[in-house]
Image (cartoon, rainbow, N blue to C red; front, top):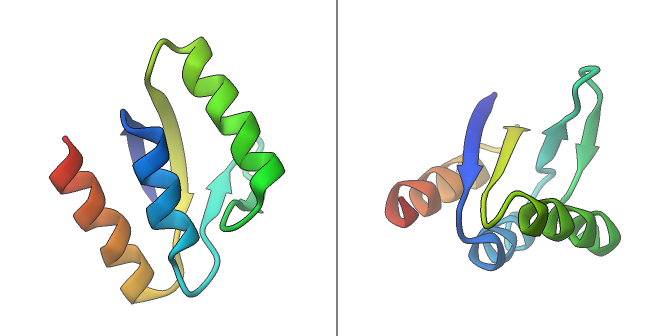
Length: 79
């Protein structure tokens, strides 16, 4: 599990949509929702991002090791 603060939403979503496997967002109740290529859910994330004035705290679980490293590399390069 990783907790991130997204500052570049479009690049983040590009990375997520390029993943091979699921990218789960963890909800406040512990539920998992796959956000990879889930464009309606991504529109909701964009709205939250705008409401938070250009940042979005998010908790993710990424089972695929390669996908996990993609997101980590994005995050390390974007901060």
